Length: 314
Image (cartoon, rainbow, N blue to C red; front, side, top):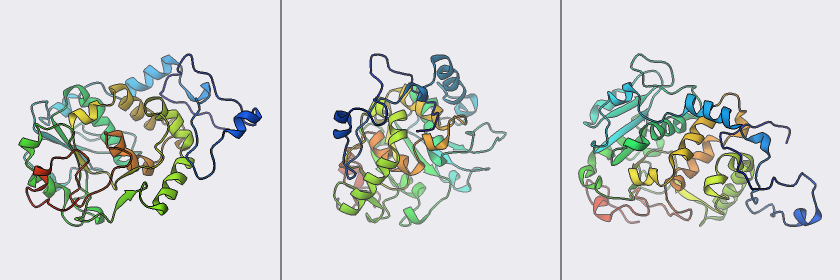
């Protein structure tokens, strides 16, 4: 491939390396067609970090517990919900609209100590940082929001307003909670790759383009990419702690550490677009998930959708 991609995934013992390019005729004949997601093989050892480098990168980039600055926000396991906000240089003014703990992470060094560097991978790095830091001390619910109060992808109602309308105290007692704030009261911005041929072709092209990064960073825990994947766009959502903990802490930490590793070329990592497409899948939504007008996930309780004006046919 001409690239030396070093991953924060350790090399798995007892698994054979893939055949070299142009291998046996048997291996060539079993390759997938251009219209199907490629089969996965174990990446070559050069794509994996030696154990000592792996531990050093995880220690630098992927926290095991909250920092004093993060704890000072009041986010604890006894909180009903903690609100994670991605901002640039300053906390947005609208964070004062919630009475719940807010962690407004900046992408530059700030005096309050709430920042994630380097400034790469958009909201994904911030979300992963929070998950890594609070994994063992998560509140029942976590809300992940962009720094802008509203945008084209939640034009019906700002995400923070949607959050305020929810019966959060009751939802905090539920399991399997996943709710998108980007529904826009319709499903215009919804990925339905398993239902719409055009979106299926788009998904297959994305998977082919990201085969290298999926092998490095996802395959060990997730297996091959799904044949099609559906979900909400634009990555603003509410999720319960059990959904986050359904993936091991090590999965989230390795993913974050690899994204923040400046020694690894960006081309070796999953694109921000791919991550946007699969966040729901990473958090337990089925690959054939169908969007709803309400924004609710596959297990979101119907009684919560009838409260606060979030009703609507699925």
